[in-house]
Length: 85
Image 1: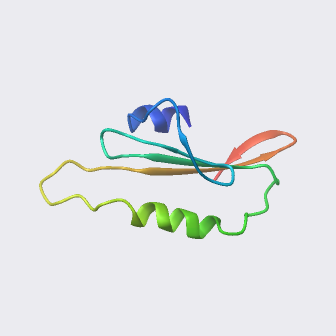
Image 2: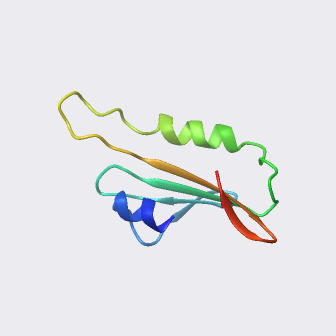
Image 3: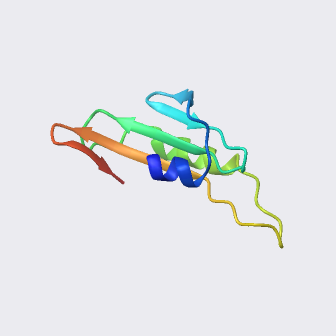
């Protein structure tokens, strides 16, 4: 998560964007949304919809401008620690 936040130049403090969800704003237009799920490897209801809504809210870059890479990080927390998806 630290690497994605550093690459996208996001704010250090995020804002809540749903259950276990934090949105980190970026002056570059490359926000990062994190979702940390405490329920092991079960895929939480509504997660897909939340991810789609996030990407739909991002404006497409115009031809000839630099590429932007907003990111969604979904982490499943279980007894052994965190695993990424």
